[in-house]
Image (cartoon, rainbow, N blue to C red; front, side, top):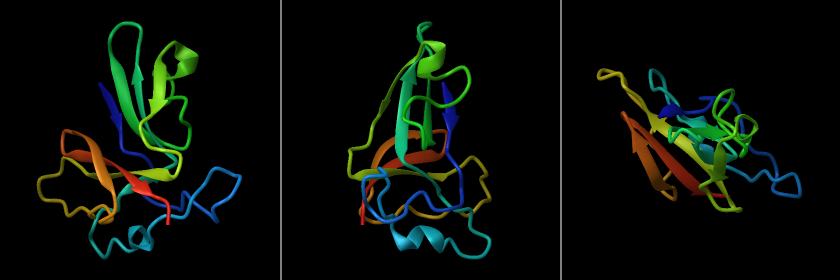
Amino acid sequence: MIVDGGAPSGPVTDDAGSSGYCKQSASLNEAGSGVQPCGMGRAFVKCTTPGGGGCLCVSDDPGGCGEGCSEESGATCANQCGPNEYAVSCGGVDPFGQFQDAPDACVQVAGVEGLDFYCCPCQ
């Protein structure tokens, strides 16, 4: 299983509208000093490859998790979040690291090797 937590910084949203983006929780922009921020994206993507493997990722592309694990490479992929939600990944494998918490309104949908995935409602 390939796991990608998504980009840890930069807004995934602008004003809600026909662009498909939605406004994220402002708390995601306030990780604090020394705290690893959560990754954010438009979708929490789960893909299954023809060989039985797969991948999970936070991405702005609901069609896959990059080269080798996408619909273009024969995988079956689906966004696990709803149409009025965005995806967040928080955590990591560093036993001494400090990690940002997901916003309170988010619902955990998966967790792999210390990295937790959430679907969060648009603000």
